[in-house]
Length: 337
Ligand SMILES: Cc1cc2nc3c(=O)[nH]c(=O)nc-3n(C[C@H](O)[C@H](O)[C@H](O)COP(=O)(O)OP(=O)(O)OC[C@H]3O[C@@H](n4cnc5c(N)ncnc54)[C@H](O)[C@@H]3O)c2cc1C
Ligand code: SF4
Image (tube, rainbow, N blue to C red; front, side, top):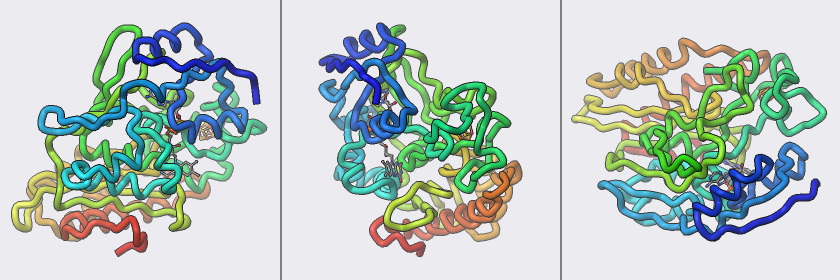
C-alpha cells in the first residue's frame, strides 16, 4: 500500500476545502469500498479525508418526504421505522445488498459512489479504460458474465453495483451536494452516467463536490412495490439483474408505474417509455411482458452474458407481478416467490 496523509475535518466546508487543495485526496466514509480498492492498488490517494465527523447522520422530514444525511449507514436507513413504513422499497433494496456487517459500516453517500465490480477494474495487470484511460477494455471479448446489456460503449461495459441506488432511482430521489461553487441538487437518475468515451467518470459529481444528503420525495409506493434481485448465490452477491418496481393501482388498472433495473448498465436503468406504456393499462402479465420487451429492445449481449437479456425479461415481469399483487420479495427468505 502507498503512503498517504490523513485528515479529519469537522465541517462540510472544511472537507470541501481539504479536497479542493489536493487532487490526489479522497473522502473516506465507511471505507468498505475505498479500502479494498487501496489494497488492490486501484486507488492510490495521497490523502484520506475522513468525513465521519461531519454532521450528516440524521434522517429528517423534508417537504413531505425525508432527507437522509450522507453518513447515515445503510443499516440505519433500512431499519428506520419511518423509512420502513413509508419507503419499504428502499429498505428492501438495501437489505438485498451486501451483508449485515457491511451495511452497518457502509454510508448512504459511499454506497452511491462505490465503484464497479468488473474483474478487470480490480486487476491492475489487465487493461481497463475506467482505471487507466486509454489502455483498453479487458472485459470486451473477455470474461463478461456480469457486465452490461444496456447503455454500454465500445470503451466500457461495466455495471454499477449498488442495490440502494436502483430503489432510489425508482423513487425519484434527489442527491444534495456541496462543493467549491456552492450547493446543488442532482436527480438520482442523472447522478450516475453512462460510460460513453469517458468511462473513468462514474457520475456527474463535479470535481471537489461532496454528497451531503439524499432526499426522498413525498410519493412513497407503500403497498405495491418490490425489489427483486437475482444473483449467483443467495448468501450475498452483487446483482446479475435486479428490478425495483413501484405501482399505484386503481383497482386492476395501473395509475402510475416506476421501474428501475440494476446489474444491467453503468447506472440504474429507467425507461420512461416503458413506464408510460404501463400507465392506464390493466395490471396483467401481457402488459408487463410488453413493458419488458420495450425495455430490452435495445439490449446488446457481450460474449458471455447473453443469458442476462432473458433473465432481465423474466425479472421485470415477475417484479411487476409481485408489485401488483402487493407481495414484495422477502429479503430474509431470498428465494423468489
Ligand atoms: C463483500 C462485499 C459485498 C457487497 N455487496 C453489495 C451488494 O450486494 N449490493 C450493494 O449495493 N453493495 C454491496 N457492497 C458494497 C457496499 O455497499 C459499499 O462498499 C458501501 O456502500 C460503500 O459505502 P462506504 O461508506 O463504505 O464507502 P467508502 O468506501 O468510504 O467510499 C466509497 C467511495 O465514495 C466516496 N465517498 C464516500 N462518501 C462520500 C460523500 N459523502 N461524498 C463524496 N464522496 C464520498 C469515497 O471517496 C469513495 O470513493 C458490497 C461490498 C463488499 C465489500
Ligand atoms: S468494462 Fe469498464 S471497468 Fe471493466 S475492464 Fe472494461 S473499461 Fe474497465
